Image (tube, rainbow, N blue to C red; front, side, top):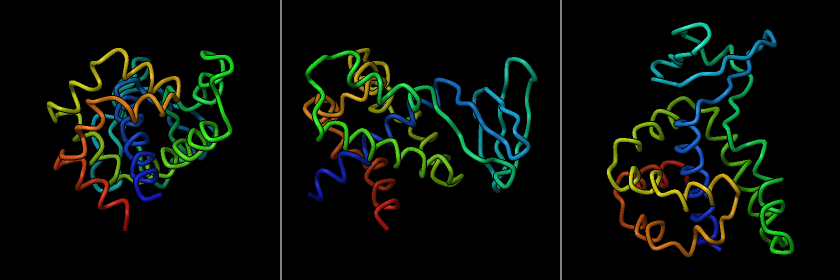
Length: 168
């Protein structure tokens, strides 16, 4: 059971790391939305570069939620791309991963740690692997768990530290 939780958390972190690269949409309390690349998070203030409005600074207190590219499509993608392959267990795992992603995305310190994963060569290799990115986008977590590159993350110190922080 502990391994499944760790796997879900790893999948959530990788999904967010991939999503960070895919320009999230930030929903603000006033109902407006900002789509852009989160460049940094410092003292609870997000620096976002938007193609339409340029660089903006948004306080965490003004953010309702952050939606990443794969969040809305994962549930549909997991059953839509592999007919008959989806099971109740897969659907439950997808829901768990999406809930984790949502919770993690709301914490500026966690997001800053996730963003720092992008500079890790092992994480870069994973996020540049088309098969892994496709599995993340489609919510195919079972194939991710069987992937040798994902399994090798077990020894990644940076990811271990982030997983330990989230376990407490």
